[in-house]
Length: 283
Ligand code: 13P
Ligand code: ZN
Ligand code: NA
Image (tube, rainbow, N blue to C red; front, side, top):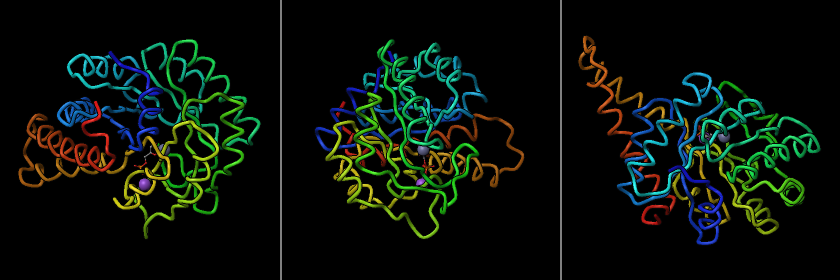
């Protein structure tokens, strides 16, 4: 069955590796991630954004994730990514999600603390993980755009205070990455990751994983990041494979004919990320 990410990420942080979290939008994407995890012997986090919950329904996603978890031997987590709506969070928890993110990073510190505490209470009541964001991560995610001028890095002292006051299990501090593909590469503040990690034992979450060069991902992990979110690149790999089939054969109308190569390409991509994160072989 699906497991909470709390102990998985604590272990990753202690041992200095990172567990990748993939945003999935279709059954085949979800299967590709679960099968890649099984073949790589890696723990893995399946996640859906609020938009995908609205698109597919929390119960459909949870049912598919639960089935995936029954079919593999590695731990699988189902996480709700970037949610600012408490009712949707509660709905996902009822559906069986084992981790939820309350994103109240657009609010002032005290309001972020208040909303996060409420979600932590809910998560603790059912033994699942809660993630929150501090600072503002740039880029576009689920239609929400944060411009480069609005993006704001997290303050290390505030991170420590935030974890202490909310009891949040995992923390996503803004450290210079952005959602989507970077124009000209990310400007990651590695020292800041180290400072934050030095002030709190909470496993840290790296958002904006698509487009970060491998050596910089390794430095982030070395500085204390224990979870890395990957959304855009997974979508691109999946969609490019479908396009390639339809380009070759514009009359193709059997979804299996283009979903199969898309799933295979996605699996290969996921396995590469598991090697990069050091999570392969850890389950
Ligand atoms: P990317 O789209 O850059 O991979 O960001 C993913 C993410 O942070 C999802 O929360
Ligand atoms: Zn994110
Ligand atoms: Na990115």
